[in-house]
Structures are given as structure tokens and as C-alpha cells.
Image 1 (cartoon, rainbow, N blue to C red):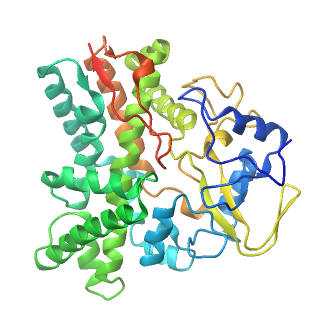
Image 2 (spheres, rainbow, N blue to C red):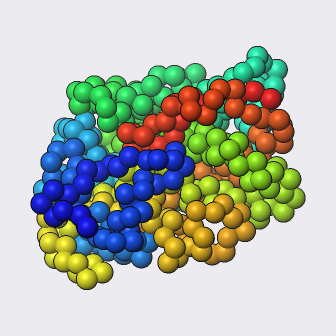
Length: 403
């Protein structure tokens, strides 16, 4: 049992790069709601069962506002950044959260996203052709996993792809929990200034892109300020490439370690199989692996445990997505798994707005890569792969491959 006076440190160490830490699995079985100690010495509640994670994320008595006392921030840098300026709608509660999110919903419907299929397919084909014509081995992260979502989000937002090195580096620096907090803050300010400049440029010369539509629809009417649009665009730009890039890299590595799963995706003629495989990869890998953070605004009875007002809560989606009470044989890759109610994209009102776009990029990207390079293989020993275990978005730093 967990020592209530000396709870375990969170996050916890993995034994396998593709599985949640064993201690998380043990806690889910023995103490599904328990205290953990995080970087600042505070002891929020860790929620590990699927039903409880969904309950927390759907309950508006648990706030997403990181400025509330008791909120379990992920790092000193993240806390400093949010204290120094307004965050995105991701860290707001309703009604402010809903006011901002409603402005974007029409941009990320399944139908609207599906209209991007030709553009995404063209981007995938171009990157794979460049890979095939280039030297071997190649780092799949820099050659494919990172440029694909960066190209897509740039075209969607109206951000010059020529600036990708700038915003990719600032995104990494901003999210780096290992860096000095002032380093995180400086990166956020530099990225914010860059995006604010784009917003002002769209005012003068709007185009056919999401940023321009936000400016012409909401800035011109006074319903959003330039700063609010900047905050929204920063969230979309960072989340739109960081998450999918890491999902591609880590997912490909898992598939290289599981040839049967790779063959299933490569040879599938029914799109439902490839789509199901993507859902399984999302469930199994859950790259937002440091938990969804909340703080209770009033006393809540959760699964028989009293969560007091002001208590921080970490909803551990990665281990919830392996809950045997919900997923039969949860550690097995099953592209035909139905139903597959994973929480890789969150749950409730803060569920990831861009999930249709992420899904489409993965549904196109994985099969195309595996078909273009049927002999794809690691170019280094698996033990030499470096993982982003301490960062909020899990993945690989590099993935040298050959064929």
C-alpha cells in the first residue's frame, strides 16, 4: 500500500517505452485513487481507473484553471508562464472556455477536416518521395514525423512554413520541463510575438486560412481581441505539430518492433482496419502521458474517496487506457477492437478540438509510409533510442531508419 505520509513521486519510471510505468498499473489495481508527490512537493490525487478519469474530466467541479490554489502544475516553467500572462482556452473554465472554443468548432468538424485529405495526402507523398531519393539511414522524425503535421498546420492556419524551424524550436523550449523556468517563459514570449505579428498582418491582408477567418469574423466585430486570437493560434500551432509528430515517431517505432501489426496496416484494403489500428496506437501509447491536471472547486465524492475543495487532481489517461475493466486484454494491439473508448484525446468539454485532424494525418501517414518502404527497419540498436520521458508530450528524440 502507498504510504500516506510519504506518497510516491510522480511521474514514475517506465520499464518498457511503450507501456505505462508498472507502479501506475499497480496503483490502478490496488489504490486507484491515491496521493502522489510532484515536483513542487505538493501531493495531488492520482486517478487511474478509466471510469474515474472520465468522471473527473466530465465534472465541472474540477477546474482547468492553473492559477487556482492547489492546481498541480506540470513544471515550474509552466506555472511561471501562466502566472505572467493569460493562457489559452485550454486552461479556462466555462463560460470563458466555451466562448473561445465555439469560435473554432466549425474549423475542426469531421466534414471540414475530411476536405483536407487531398492536401495531407500530397504532403505525405512529397515527404516520402524526398525520403526515397535521399541518403540512408535517415532520421524519420526530421524527415517525416515532424514536417508532416508542421506542413499541415501551417497551411491550415496561414503560417509560413519557411518559419518552421523557428516555431518548432520555440515550442520545444516552451514545453521543456527540464529547462530553467525563465527559458520556458522567454520561448513563449518569442513565439507569442511571432504569432501576434501574423495576426496583425492578417488584419491588413487577410487570406483563405484559419487565422484570417478568426480576424475577419471575430476581431473585426470586437468579439475577440488580437491577444486572444494570438493565444488561440499559439495553442493550435504548438499542439497541431508537437502531438502528431511524436505520435508518428513513437507509433512507427512500436510497429517496427511488432511486424505483425505493421503488416496489418500495410496490407489493409478496408479503411476501417487502418483506422482501427490508429485508435489502438492512440490508446496504447497515450503520448500526453503526464496526466490531465485539475483542481477541485468544491468537495467531491469520487469512487468513494472524498476529494476536498482545493485538492489537485491528476487524471492518468495512459494507465486508464489499459484498464482491464474496460479493454479486454488491454496490452494487446487489436486493430479491430470495438468499442474503443480510449481517453487519449481527453474527455468532456476540454476534449481535444483537433482530434479529427490528428486522426486523419495518422490514418494517411502510417499506411503510406509502410507501403512506400516495406523493408523499413531501425538503423540503430533499439537500446540506443532516446525517449522524451520527462516532457509533457512523450515520444522519441530521433528515429534512425533504413530500408
